[in-house]
Image 1 (tube, rainbow, N blue to C red):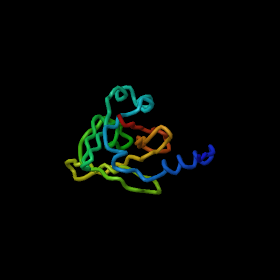
Image 2: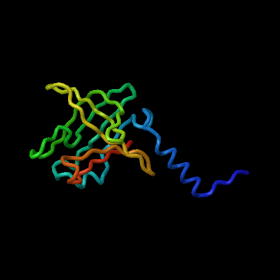
Image 3: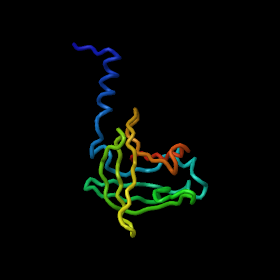
Image 4: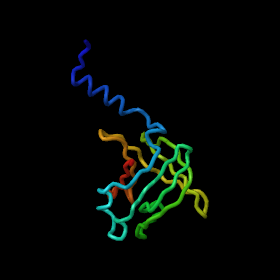
Length: 139
């Protein structure tokens, strides 16, 4: 019988978890995590924010804080639809959301984070140095 030592098992799990994101790993309904609500202004933190990534490459975003936000204006809840795809930028996999808006297409990235508990999608509200990270989990 084959025995795996704990170190070998950990290395196998890490290798499996470090693969590229696949369509079936990211399609579905993503909702904002409770920890992200705590950093939002009071007028935004009760929103039922969600992003639905469909397998046909389309998406809808509903009450998402700040994708069209431009400091110094305060963030607001936005929603729209468009198409999405998996891209790699600066060594990180991202979901690129291409919104269909009145003034032409608008692209918005969601970083794909793979952790022990699964995949999280996130972006920063405003300057990343401010640490206002908005996380989404799949439901």
